[in-house]
Length: 256
Image (cartoon, rainbow, N blue to C red):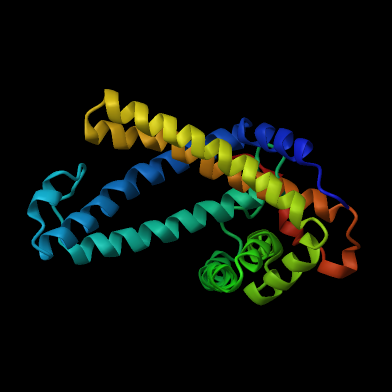
């Protein structure tokens, strides 16, 4: 089945502005707002150790924490971010917008997290190698393995199977997927640039950086919604035997 960009964008917007989408958006905003000070603290402590104290003074939202604690907190924050991505993908793929799918928050979380950590690392290695070699292979790898995450978190695959199934599902639609991502990232980039420039000019540094949370969270979430909707659309004509059925726990819904 060929990908229809306009229908993917419309369906993604509906999912983002649904009840579950609003709840996920608030969670993403809280997560981003918590991670920014930890990231700033790491940067400030590194500058301090390098003797760049003047640069340290210019960084807003620095916590009174040693570097080791800031790094540990940031790593925990990244894991929480991956967990939120698992919940979001499961919700956007299997939910109807009114309630979260059964098992979205709890089913096989350690397995999904472990495969995502390794899978995302392998994914970016493949992309990097592709860009270093001839550039075009990097672009192909980016779109060809785009659906690794849905296969891991929705169908409980391992990352190797997720990469293989993503390649098979996306093949024949690499160009359309590239255009779709270009639209999403292009709009997100423009919004981020304008919002960042405006907040930087009108607000103090600390408030200006926190205001980016309002921009970054929706952009991140709509990207996941687009991946989920495109994943569903391309699977419509896929025989069940090729990729295997989704776990039965994903088909029912429970109130949030």
